[in-house]
Length: 248
RNA sequence: AUUCAGGUAG
Image (cartoon, rainbow, N blue to C red; front, top):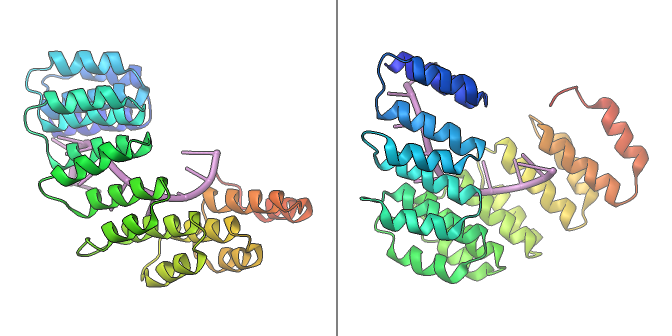
């Protein structure tokens, strides 16, 4: 059954919804994980009604099933539906709480996010980071920092989130300070600091960082393209294009 | 290492 589920996951991840359905129907047996994978496939496809049907009809929905449904509402910006499902589910986990917090943050419901945050039973680095972002999106830098400081061991995601918050609020030096504080920087952290430099008008520093970063992905290149485009340096942009290794 | 939540760019 694990083998079947692994295959189902592979189809689902590649976005082959029809193949996923066929495989699911032809499986000799299905456990809750199989159903959850199918649920996730519908969710990723944006077929929320189908996802709802699966959740309501599957034999043994568990907390993961509900979390997938919450995640689907979250990704589509359905705040009310997300809250309703959250209230309806039997035993919300920390993932459920964080998902609801995230949809509040993304849709600009800061008051609701704050109230929810206070009720979360077992705060962890993920839920706190989601709250940091909720504040950051509203420009509440001090509150974001205060929430960040509640994290016992801030990881790279938490640090990058705060770094981005500083940058967007115009505190470039604080953003750079955060970047220095990140020991093993991943590509997202590099991309974030480059975008921060660009946003704050330090194109040349951005270029230096871009050259220094070990592994560039499509976001790195895209950030530099728009940087050049925004300052009207189309020659540099086309030069970038030429030296860019053909990738995604 | 069979499924679910937080960070950059798009």
